[in-house]
Image (cartoon, rainbow, N blue to C red; front, side, top):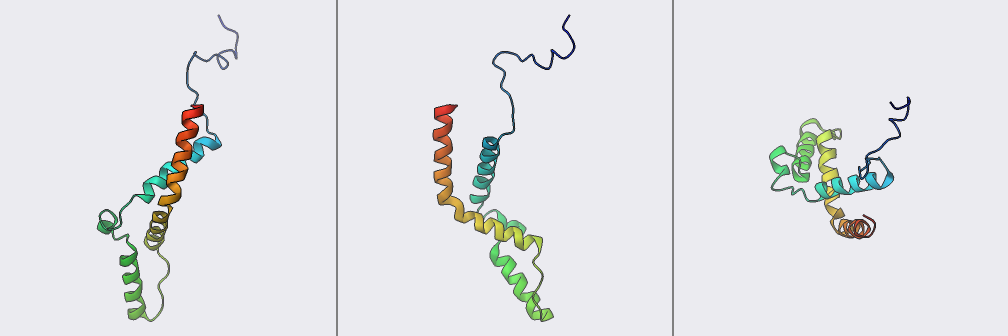
Amino acid sequence: HLPIGTLDRIKPRGAATMTLSLWTLLQATLLFSNAFAILNEERFLKKYGITMSAVASAASSDFYTTGRESQSTIKAQVAGFLHACSYLRVPLIFANALVIVVKALFG
């Protein structure tokens, strides 16, 4: 029979621990950045109207009908964010290479 509190200290041998660290957060950010960077505006986002051209045409038509600029909608901000993420492709190549080397060396 084990004393109270010892079960918290017992870990199986070879069990991987899932800890949230800065390295894990960096890898998750890199993963999501890769996903956003490879989205193609014309093939995938056009179905949902989240392209820069669709947002710009909607804003210009709103300007001509009401005479004032429209407020920045969530759809326009998402389109701008995804368009900006497409410029991350070259830096992401180097970041991915760095993560691959670190994972290969240190596991």
